[in-house]
Amino acid sequence: MEHGHGGISDALPCLHACAATSIGTAAIFRILESFATWTKKFLDLEPHGIMFLMIDSTESAIDIVSFFQFPPIGIRCLAHSIVRASGNDIDEGY
Image 1 (cartoon, one colour):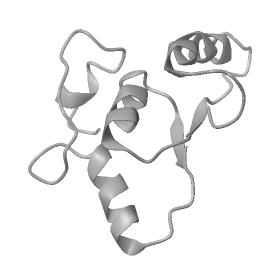
Image 2: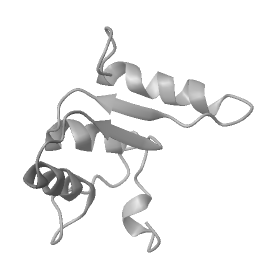
Image 3: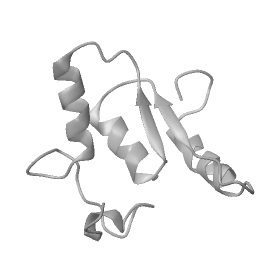
Image 4: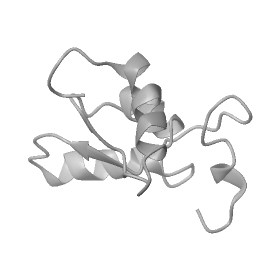
């Protein structure tokens, strides 16, 4: 997502294409900005991973980790039944 014309609306078809391969190609998004809003949108699509650019301080790393965790530890929100990853919030192993 960093280079080229693709954006969030192109991400889900990319995930479907990766999943359709015979070897189950992992989908890892490299997103341009390290903001909670963008991270949450990409997490809701349930990629195998997300890469962040230029994390140059401990504070930035701590903020980014908080995007992945639910309160009270982090700031990730729940979106039951409307997102691809809707089962993750109730899976104890998640």
